[in-house]
Image (cartoon, rainbow, N blue to C red; front, side, top):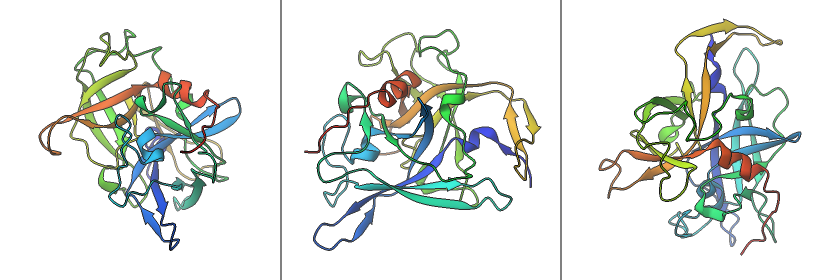
Length: 268
């Protein structure tokens, strides 16, 4: 088995699912991306507010044409075995009286959400909490026009039906200047597509070292340097997907604030 880049093992393919109340029919809302984040011995599946809620984060309008919002999410976990098997689990997003996922203290205006889960035993994914990160978007590490990678599942594309796609991008707004008054938000220049929502955005060094560890059957390429910029939440501007290629990234500080916001809000 050839080595897999470590950063390919952060991203998890997600399928938000709504249920038609009258028939019980399941409606899959297309693909999205998420990643794991550990905090206080708890494990969270992190993605965007609009992925888990089914609502536009700025307008609160229902996104799906059926008027449904997701009640659960299907997560495709890669297993740590020689066949690169998948274990697909379903996680409840809503109960009768409350939602199970957590939002930012500022609500949906910060397009990040987290769901506490129990991952499958023997999964191969790393948590984004393990990555060296800059203290904030204004940290000296990041500069405008710096290259970063968005690692996710554009249009649901999965390499070998399992692994994410890497899309090259550059930071398009000054990290030192708040975007729309929010110091934890910036723009990247990338040709984004549906399915990339919730993708981790990383700076990854060019040099890698193949290392085997634990009882894994293959090798993993570990980059010499990797720094977490944040979480991708979608395209802005333009009347169609070709007229603008600017995407929004929320900082890892926002992710931490979400997983620490333990209050679960009642639905409705």
